[in-house]
Length: 175
Image (cartoon, rainbow, N blue to C red; front, top):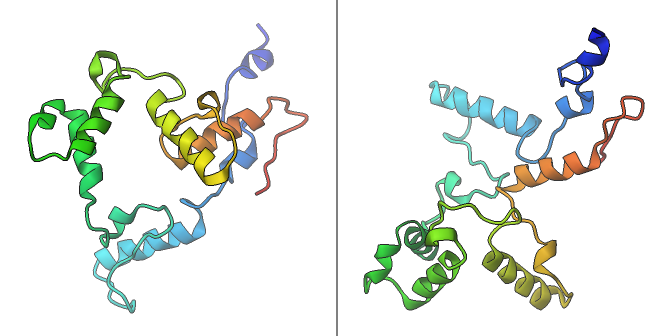
């Protein structure tokens, strides 16, 4: 058996493109790492900083900053999607009820727990198409829209598309 040929079939730290190990983007990197160090020091009792907490403003997570008031509309929508009997309550606005019904109508068993199309919920993609067309005046199509679980997953997917497996011509990405 040829071990070298067999070993080429497995991804290891030695066969991994070194650029992957060095990748940095907005939610990681030296600034975020330094912020985490400072945050740890503050929690450990270090009072040498002119502030008593770190506000992470790099990831677009307003709630994590502690300064964002909970958005009732979004919470009502999510609550209705995850527990539809809540929509029987007169306490929920009619527009929330309509949007919950619209989303759940494309889910198997009218449940968010069911699998979706690979590209994501069609109703959400339809709304994105409408938004793009109204904002940009550019025709859009639901088949061109791919939903993902946040920016990190989207970046990983795009990078995988751009990379090749040719060791003689390693992929490199400049941003």
